[in-house]
Image (cartoon, one colour):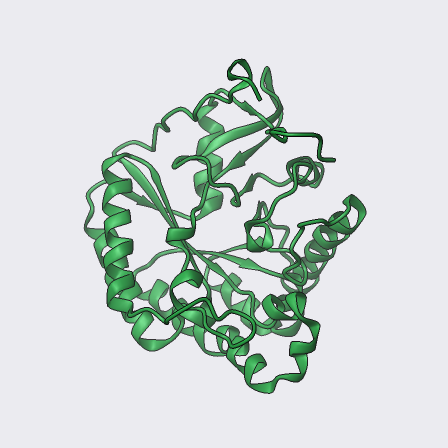
Length: 299
């Protein structure tokens, strides 16, 4: 890619009246799918499966209680497999007034995946959420945040409003097939690894042994620093939590402290990703063209 082809940075977002920045609490309800997809043989490991089942069985109810206490709405990314395995949990999320969004079917990584297989995973996830909860999600988050260059077009074909998988900005922006027009475009709401609890808390021998399990006090300090900086920069703070990780008691206490900090920031808009995406589209930002591979060609 030459300098002439460089993609311009996303423009600042004009937030709703009296708001200076935005924040969203998002939860990836992976449950067993996170490891069944990576290693199908893990299905025979009862302790591992119970570790993952903690999310829908214990973590999600605890998260829902926290959100209810603070009268907040969250965005829950639910793989189709999780919806089929835990339909009552998904129904509770919907009944609580929260957003249910798409997160694959079996939390499949799209790395090296052909087009037909990726389309089947997206469609199967849609079918499961519709069957279980009568939900047609407007948002998508790629499992492990792994998009293919074709994925935005596949999402547009299926009527999605937004994606939340990319990492090249701190504010939402419009991603279009052609930069000259927003006729076929999707809102991108960026994320980043520092605002994901997986890097802090995940430890499953042989599957997610990423290092020492961090103290919630350290995690709270890091996320608070991030929140305050996003707020000063008038950006969009997107926190990603997994109920089987953050749903544990001491970690939930830290998350509640973070929520209290959010509520104390004057003019911080606490919203679902669907609300943030709808606002971004309504503002009519200049679209950015779908990215192209820097070397060679990817389907």
